[in-house]
Amino acid sequence: MAGIRTKTVVASNAGNVLEWYDFFIFAYLAPYLSDEFFPSSDPFAGLIQTYGVFALGYFARPIGGVIFGYLGDRFGRRLALRVSIVSMMVPTTLIAVVPTHQDIGTLAALLLIALRIIQGMSVGGEQGGSICYLVEVSPPGRKGLIGSLAYTGSVFGILLGSFVVLVAKSSFTSEEMHDWAWRIPFLGAILLGLIGLWVRRHLHETDDFLMAQERGQLTKQPLAHLFTEAPFGVLKMIGVILYTTVSFYTVFAWLPTYASHFGSGLQLDPQLINTVALLVLLCCLPIGGHLADRLGYKRVLIVPAFIGAILIVPIFLAAEAGSESLLMGLIMLFAVNMAMANGALPIAITDLMPAHLRFTGVAVTMNIEVAVFGGTVPLIATWLIATTGNQSAPAWYLIAISLVSILATLTITPGMYTATALPSARHR
Image (cartoon, rainbow, N blue to C red; front, side, top):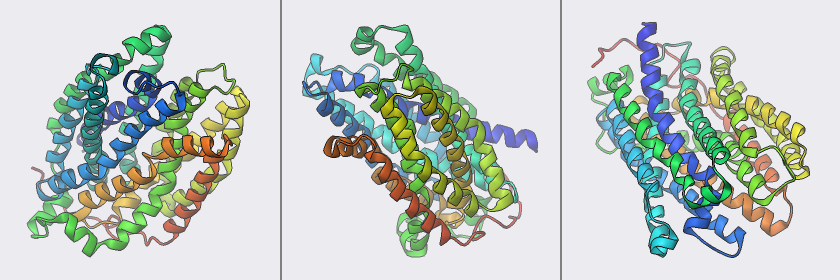
């Protein structure tokens, strides 16, 4: 049984690695994409345009959540998870070969936008689907631990992207990176996609879906039923995810580019800081899931939100002052704190949705929230600094967000759908 569970975790996370590697290298390579697709004499304008495309991928995620949610709740989790791999591998590979503004003018930006939208739709189904899948195949008392592994694939993909970009920047000159070497990390999608397709052939359907199917609970319109059967679950989920979303994208997606592009006196490459922090986060995620099983996920979500609100201002002040050792220490501590919250998140959000609407509920709700509050983080953070002249302004935004998440978490009643043992259904 342990062997089957290991294969299941590996197969489920294989797609996550591809999806988040592909999705995040766009953010890491933003300065180069800005020059190649949105040339401008004003570095702020070019970068803001690139981050606008980055955010556009997030606004496409809810569409992907609807599409893949329908597949997952209507035809099964494993079909949706297989299709999502292909829909990410193709556009990412094409980004590696798309002509730039110098070659075809404005059409280059339009092609980049179109490919980014397809990327967003794909990741919109992958993350929620893998979370639902792992929680559903987990036994009672271990749903927090095994569910937390859904984020290990995501973080590993982001970590891999960070590492590949770091290696590329170390291997090529700045001129080569701006000219052509920025394309190399995007080519990794081909290998990762083929590996993901191969390992996911082992996926079996979950007991929860099979039971809903046998009971005649499946619906042809899961999205419509979501907002009539579980409207409060949707609202609570948005609130609960707010802190983990905004803090993650602020510290691990936007901060390294901000520090390197506009300069903060740091001699140590912020990309290296980011890579080490993500490694710490990756290693600590299962601890958060285990604590959620032992202490209850509400506690494990509330405490990190409170601690994060305290840590974020010193992180920005250290980055602004160019204090390398202090910044490294604070970000490492923040990574551990984030691991606790993210580790407890999968069981919490699946507990808010009934099985026959779970894929749609988690995918659509997560992606609406991430589109509005996650994908816009780089844009909002850059705008706040440009408008106020205060380089720590984004920290206060995150503090307000953390308070909202704490209040939303307090409204949850644990054990609604995931705490009890499920009768065994046959695997197909």
